Length: 134
Image 1 (spheres, rainbow, N blue to C red):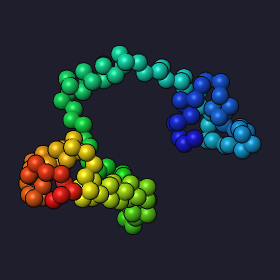
Image 2: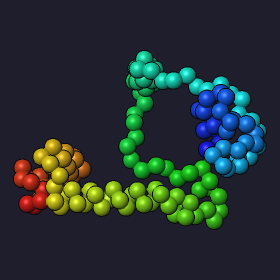
Image 3: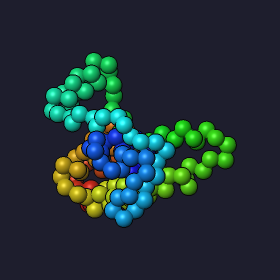
Image 4: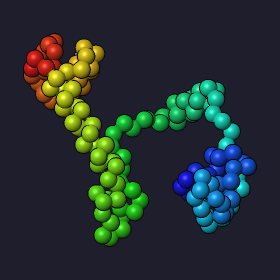
């Protein structure tokens, strides 16, 4: 459990206490979590969020996460702080290269082709062939 994640536990859960033993481990927190458990999300909640996003012109960002707030501190080492993000990036890069070299399926090939054309990259894959043939 980390920080305010305890709020999502049921109101009577032992981990909401300041000090508690749970599953043979002793947990100690700065204070007791007294906020009510949030209401569960429903389909209507999602529709409301979607209409708010459309109303406010929110654009979903699918790219790399920005640096954390602490990155502005002198001597902050992002690469040591965020190992999992780097591991994820390397994994996805490898998967993308494999998909590009070997191909995945016709839908992926078409999406890769359209994306490459939009970005003006990898001109050899513009032709309607399997990417693995290129």
